[in-house]
Image 1 (cartoon, rainbow over the protein chains, first blue to last red):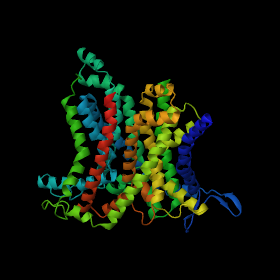
Image 2: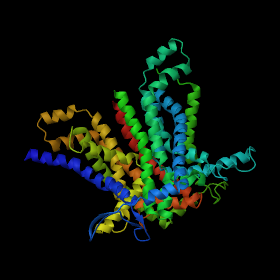
Image 3: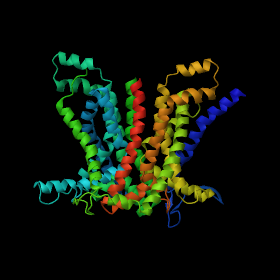
Image 4: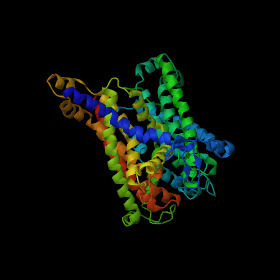
Length: 296
Length: 268
């Protein structure tokens, strides 16, 4: 009896979350593939499901029209895709440049300062990105704080256009994703053995040489992890291009939103979502491959 | 003593902290601006905060967000705990690979994709068996619980793995039954991570705009949805005031949570 209960409990521990995630995470993805292969029509809901269980039994009539449409109007869809990758790539790079000195400083401070700095990193990470992007708009607007200051200081006469540019997107990305870059960098830098650095310094190595030949190579796992953590969500970002970007800063997350809410073309929205997943899988598979290489 | 950090690195790091904090601090200052014009400072005033009290749309949205946050965080934490136990304590079981896939994929899935796919499922379910009829608080709750449990699982898993097993083994050697050992030994030891996981799931739910926008129905707008539609109309001291309050509230929760997590790191 006792072992039966234990076995039952064990099954429950595994199957409750597995069941939930299968129904509410896996099944939606399957349904999204189904909708992306469905025909759009004017109805509620606005599509004719490819896979159907109806009065006449099970039918499966997939159409590739939605993917063909994306292919045909490739300028409208490919450009946001390329743009997403470009903006995410440079955002990752800028985050890395800002995060490295921060992570290094935190890793090298004493314990009590380290705690304070880590909390200072964590706090903006968990406060809403929407609100922080809103705060950024207040800074970058033509009549915002920065332009007011520049005009007051006599540096410029007319406000500088900062909103709806690549600059505003990068500022938003850095503000949102900097903590995600710092934490893995910090984790790899804090493990670095001080005696190695001291030995290099005693032997006459310059600061720059120490950084280039010791610190950077040893922190490489943190760099890769941080870049993935920033790049992956940045590619699919919606709030940042929606609030800070103009028509030139279209990204796939925003295109899905527009297709769905404004154009009410659900099958095309689903097809774009699948393309977005495909873009994200590439760096993940690459990282897995790198991990295996390292283990071997 | 650790080797000194070059001055240049320190300055760059301080600039980095500046980037993280200056926008929010400026916004908080301007929330006390008397003038409706955002860029003109016309003296100190708390009138925008007072006005929030009379904004019914906002208060209803706040109530919905809190309701969804509390319930989804609770579901997330319970299921996250189950996932963590399955991974750390059960060596090998059927479906381990599948569970690790479905418990980690939501962490990297773009919100727009998660939101869209869930909405499509809810609609297909409604067409097929009439549930859920329409979308509202319950569908947002399910969606938030689904990605929240994956984050909760990560937090609890780390603690469960690092836990000192000797107390538990001692209890078992002395004849303690499994449920007793779990409730009186394991649970208290991992409690800080459970609280941290709950706080994390709550803030994720409370802050979420994109997924909630997809799976919400008419009349079930959460606070971020209402704020987003207000932001689209432009910067205003009223939004500054809401944003200030929300950020302060979440920051307080995070302070408590990170204190719990850091304290256990400090003990080691």
